[in-house]
Image (cartoon, rainbow, N blue to C red; front, side):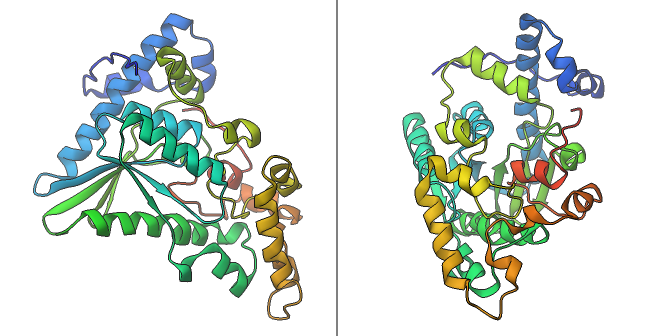
Length: 319
């Protein structure tokens, strides 16, 4: 495994401002300038983690430092950067995702000797249980999906590793970036919810920065699922599905389409479920969907990068 030597972050506001660049600015840099920028960003990323430890663990010990690993190419890069510092990787097995992505996560962590904790929602919180009770979720229900399918997996991990919440806390590292979407332009770098602490080491990175890092190291694995459908596929709840998306997924992963169509068949004749909600991805066909996105009507989750962009109409803004 190759590691890029990073430039220590000087911890000044001027240094932070110097790293604030739009994707367009980064694209205009030369190859050597982009590589130097990545070394400086790596220094910032490690400082962000160090600062989280200073902020939240003065009177508490670190029960574990966990990388939140969806299996997408961006989260794989995050895991690669911190594979030597993190105690484990956490993958939320949503139960409505592509198995090849789950296996990619398992294989990658095994190759790095990075312990993997794979958690799934309890049966009462499962995607299947939700659909059978209320039908398929639409855009307004996306945050509920995040809570049921992902956030409660974090809570399971916390409960497993934190023995005494008065003395211990867990630190989760996430791959959120401010240039991903309009919604993420103002994300906080650090956060805490009781004994669960969060840091976003890639806050200032752009997509091109991540690609430059991969080229510099040469050994960051690529999830073929992401290449085929342009998302990690670890969660296909359908809240922000595009038109014809299920058919496109089915071209490459027919077993997932079969799983979803079986759920559609189970509720097709139910009188207690509104007609639109009997079809996966029904929100994509709402005439007012774009207007609702522009109004910021939808709330997304901290582990749902691609859905953040979809919730704002796919807008990507300056970092």
